Image 1 (cartoon, rainbow, N blue to C red):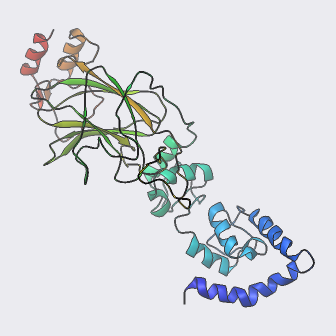
Image 2 (tube, helix red, strand yellow; image 1 turned 60 degrees about the vertical axis):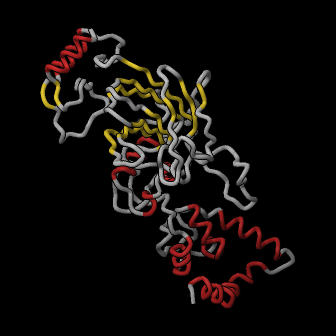
Image 3 (cartoon, helix red, strand yellow; image 1 turned 90 degrees about the vertical axis):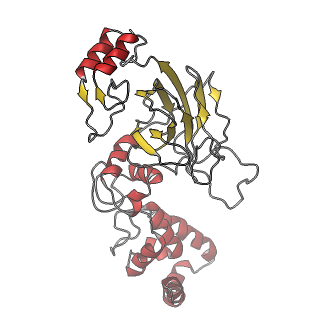
Length: 371
């Protein structure tokens, strides 16, 4: 017999008898409602939801209310063993608040600041099921206390992808191989939403020769940007990936493309984890409208992004719009072999103009030719 069924039987025989004296009289029915409302006032109160304590209620609001809906005595008398058993059964995945600072890693899930904890686990469920690792702590620093922003997309060309569709998502599993063509200097806009398949926007930067771009991205969500090499048939390699701060203004990266097929991919996430929740689509899919019993959408931050690709001269290492002494200085400062064992830094000046794995005479020749 499950705990739920056995508990209901025991509640009928014993807990109900304890409750009857409290609700006798002319206002019995009304009082039951009053008792329940009063009971929920104990949510939250100090006390571990998964440990016995003498006072009613416990520290996790959602868990406390779930248990007290099942047995209001847990919120009027004490948090006994029956309440603890109910917490283990009904409160899986609920960990806010819990012991441990939000900005420090610890082995248990959740953290001690309720609002910050809820913000982090809404984006990253790992932090509520597996433990509060260093990434969760970093996400607390980046996500908590941030005021949602709205970016100005006036004059931008729309990607023409409703957030409930996946039209510009490259060759993801089960998706049509479609990418956005990059036009130099054109401001574009779109949306990224949660759910699955993961929503990504792919920008084609293919070429028979190496090219230098500056890509600038501004977003209302935690934006993840990566540069991927390879075709639909594979193999595919990510040369670099970065995650920018939220609502901290535009982020620009100057990069050189490799020969052949390559793609800039924009999504929601950090440089450690992708985000698929807390940014639900704000448009209604006419082919699959929400039902009356569907949960409300959850969007803690905005969905919109805007981006611009600027085409630079190959030898414009510093991206100032001209090839000159500053670029020569950067090339000489990076003279020699590029260490393949080091992770590629997309923010570092890239002076390997010919892509042969070293900065040398051939690159100097290309720079002087573009002076």
